Image (cartoon, rainbow, N blue to C red; front, top):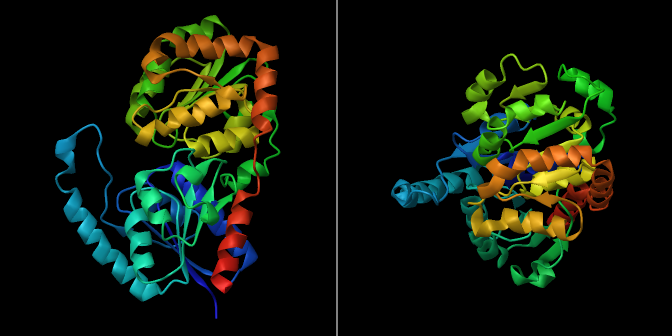
Length: 364
C-alpha cells in the first residue's frame, strides 16, 4: 500500500520552492507515494504547486500583520476555521506523515496532525526559528535545519542539519553566461547586475534601483530586474527606452538569471541565500527589516562574517545600494573572493536527505 504524505506551508517562494523540491525527492525515492499540499487560499502556492504537477487544498488562514494591528481583528476566526478545514482534510486523506515547510498554513496542519499522533516533520530554513515552529518542534518527530546552533530553538535529539532544498533546475543547470544574457535581450560583453527581491518583490530594493537608473547607463552596466507584481508597472514605465535594462514582475527561469548576473542584489531569506550559494554568486544582501525576529539580518550577517556576502540595510538602500553593487561589479578581485566563499557553503542534496529521513521514520 502506497504511503501518503501532506506537505503544508507556503506564502512565498522561500517556502514553496523547497516544498516542491522535497516532494520531487519523495517521488524519486518512492514513485507510488501519494502527496497532497495544503496552502493558504489566495497565496502563490495555490498557483505554483499545481504548475509543478501536485494537488493542493487551500485553507482560510492568514498571518499576523506586524505593520497594522487593526488588520488582525479577523485572525482568531480564520485560525479556528482553518482548524476545522484541516481536520476534514486529514480525515479524508489519512496521511502517514505531515511535513511543514513554514508559512501560515503550516501551523494548523501540523498541530492537527500532532493531536492525532501522526508523525510530523518541520523544515526550518532560517538561522532564527519562528515561534510557531519552536512550539511545534516540541512534539515533532524530526526537525530539519539549515545550519548548526539550532539547539537553542529545538530539542537537540530531534535536529538533523540538512541545509536548504534548492530547486532542481538550479542545482543541475549548465547554462553559460553568454547564452543566459542573450535570453534577456542583453549584451554578453557588458557587466550585468541581477536584482531580485524574492517572489513577491521588495519595496526598499525597488525604490533604491528606481532612484538610480541613470547610473547604470553611465557606468555601462546592464540590469536584470525582477520587481514583484506591486512594482512591475511602475518599473516598466521607468525602464521604457532603456535598452540596458530588462524588467518583469517574476523570472520563471532563475537558472538563466543566475548565469547572467555577475553580481546579485537580493533579500536574505534563507532560500534566496541557499540558491545563491549553489550558483556561487557575489551578492549584496538587503535584509527585509520586518521579518520575524529580524531573521533576515541574522541570515545575511552569517555570510558577511564568513566573507561570503555584503550587507546593506534596507533603511540605507536608497543612498548606498546601487553604488555598492556597481562598485562590486568593477572590483573583480573582491567579486571572485565572494564567489569562492559563498560557493563553499553550497548544499545540493538537502531535498534527498530530508526525503530519505521522512520515509525512514514513516517505516518505523
